[in-house]
Image (cartoon, rainbow, N blue to C red; front, side):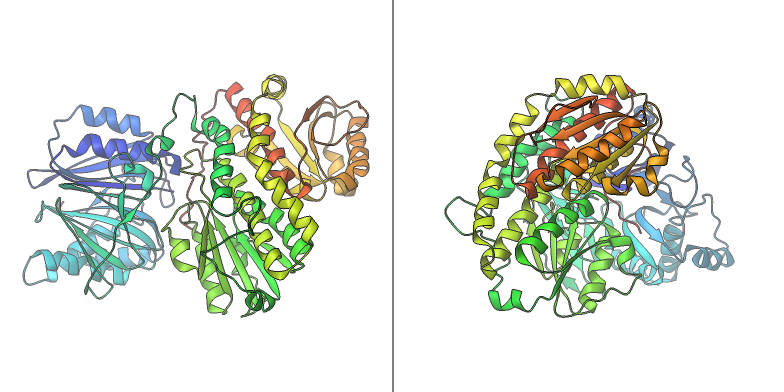
Length: 612
């Protein structure tokens, strides 16, 4: 949600800022804006709509400045409009601010500032920030760069909520100040230039060297250096983190959409994730964890906490942890976890999953778990992200940048990593050795089987053409197949806007079957051998009531009266969700393309949900 970029250097800022915003479009937004320092004055341009519209607006202006900030806004306070877009300037046009997050006490601050004769043009919470900075700056005796930093610090002390902030000041046209709290912000280090952004892919093509800010840390950027300060403005040292992602992985590389590219990258993402931990002959290795049998014997229960797609990955891990490691496991939606007084203590392991590592609800849940003395383990795709810095232990997927809002390769990489984590735990605890051996063998086969599956997609394309105008779709599954039904359902509704719901197959007759009528599309996943016959009976119940059916399966059974059957490779049942989701990802993609919708940037959604 929202994207911040900034540049300071010898080049013209305008094109670098637009390129940065374009690279962050996956975060989701409804308006965009930019401020560029032009001869010690601001030129601020803002528009409702896409970055390309902002770019067209900029092209009409002669902008030579080498320092600027820009923003894509996802509306919270105030409707999408040019006026509500960022950057926001103070009444005197001395300060310009971009902000990601929510200022919870903005109404109180606005009242305070109005009493000081400040006026407000927008409906946003953000507009209090530049005016508050101006207020504190005007109280300083000497208008120096330290007093500029002090005014930003005093402003942050008044803010309640979350924020990543970039600030320019016309009095100091050679620098910018940034600070973060509970919202992501990174600083890219270049030669004679520096960058700020909400996420690494914004400037991955221009630098691989990044500084990762912690909460309540400030930085002053000039074109040649970056100075860091703690919450009390004491100077601190920060090391550079080198990001080894391939810059081209944040480009389409000939694919029509990022989502399709990322679907086809899944065999590679799975293989890269496997290679870090697993080989045929050796025990599973997680050197970054180094857990012992004594430690795992103290763990009485496990909580897996995540949102959306990551939560669905956690559901599959729950089954493996309970069946193989025999540790009671619960899966919680992060936004609910904090508000139900979870029964966790020092004997609890809490696993937090977030692709971006910046999911606000998941980070808040992690902090609660730590306060209750639970051991915390973060799983993310982004090294140095907020969740990885908060957790006691960290292990990473290796999917590379995922740009499309609808997650695909991050999801299958998460399940792959979780399956290896189960093997790691099981081997330490000396659990079911034959089952662990088969699971390990099957994981090593996953990339090849995913490649086989992706080599034949014509049937899915053809079926999408038949059903893309449907208004309602229902997904059914039993056991682990229900988890896949939930994720397939989410993919379809996220990008095609078709109403869809997922149900346990056995629950049909307890209410949902009332929704089935002639030509209703019902998609069923059949990969659990011991539940096959019962699942087929459930499908027959909807066929009897006029439904058309799509079945995803790796099981052998007599041909039936299903409308369409798509076969996937056989695999260990615990790993079947990794393969069975791929046809459903493709189906959602091709249905959306048939409808002429934006696959990568669905309406109202953001890739990184950084507000609660």
